[in-house]
Length: 171
Length: 405
Image 1 (tube, helix red, strand yellow):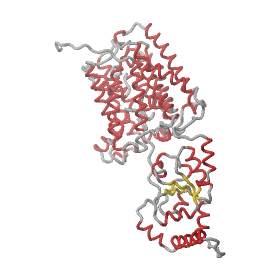
Image 2 (spheres, helix red, strand yellow; image 1 turned 90 degrees about the horizontal axis):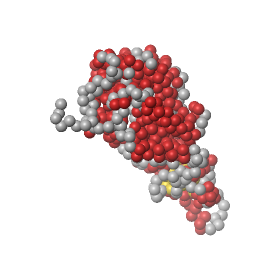
Image 3 (cartoon, helix red, strand yellow; image 1 turned 135 degrees about the vertical axis):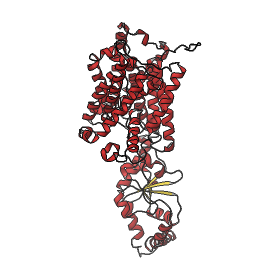
Image 4 (cartoon, chains in turn red, blue; image 1 turned 180 degrees about the vertical axis):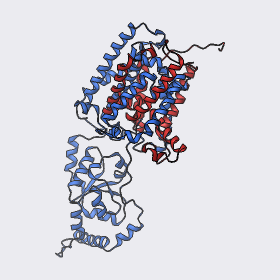
């Protein structure tokens, strides 16, 4: 460890963070006419990769069909920004460390397996929901979208129903 | 005014640059809020840390209140904003699957990326998982498609779905948010688990911007139902006055004169259907069907500074509607072709009466009409149309913002 151990700074007040995030979202809608997102960038990357690896990918599934370069999309640029922004924040607040967050009662590999499975489910779900927590739920709420509210309630509702069964992962 | 990029107020080329900057701020705020930790995120389901709910709900009501006021004041055209379309079955199926993903993985895609960037190994594996999941969905997309497209309701607004007015919905949403903030705070304070996770600035000062937004949202229900004014809307008294002004109707001769001498002092707006427009229109006229007259994409083409905008239709009815809508929205220097195309044809192409000429004015009028007739009928016009570089058809329309996560 570094001798000049720097103290990890506290997190931002959640109401202030929420306010700033809301203003950012409003600004995004005002400038670009659309909300924030995340999973859409993964979708673009997957489509691009599928087309590079297999030229016949569009015949395998309509999902891989693409006219222009899928990486030239708003969300891809936004997520590249997210990577920079998160790194900047972690750097400023001294939170850049290799670490596994998990409940105290489980092993590291259990956490990793569930992380991959959870990620995969989120990947599938975000395509059905036409957006994830940011793109469908949060941005949907901002523009009063019925679809956004429905997806949000389904995400968190399911989470609460299942919380008991997966408590060992976290408690 | 907004959204800026779909309306080409800011060049579309800059869109990606803004996307990047917005992303930087998004990533920064998420990380500062503590969303890079799966244990903090999962806390919302177990009652030891409600940071997700606090940040998410505050951001949601802030943005929703802002969107409400921006569109109320005419600063944001909701027709051009991406509103997530509602496919009922798919939205529920997707949400439930994401609920499973959340409780098992501890992240959502945005927060997963943020966690991965600052070195959370579980987040890195979560992000790998998202790629796998999206690929699985893509690979089997053709089999999922029936569910994916079932029960389509369009870009439905939540207040319409509930049969509420928009400000009242916002009001209820804010009440629910405040109740949730108070209740969850009590639960969190009682919980004895993982107190070390909740390390955030507890300063009361930091909460006042959110409190301000809540007050603003309450004001929404006190506003009159119909918005009183667009930014430039004129009063009904002034509108009545302008309707009565006979000068707003330009006679056919005036239009003909301008076309013949290429004065370039008028913008001719054909408010009929594109079909009728393609059958016949004045040289240089643009086609803006009457129901689209106030669409932002035509704003700079139909209303040009220092030029008269002249609406015309077959009779006078459609052009009258276009004129009224434009006048009410505060457009200046607008006119209609008196009597429409029918009258124009009658006056310019009709027989010039052979009766005696009363005075010199009338003689000059007749001479003009005769020359105009020659101009329009005997081909001079068609010659010019070929060399004319003026756009003869309506311009490419701007597109509504694309969205999707």
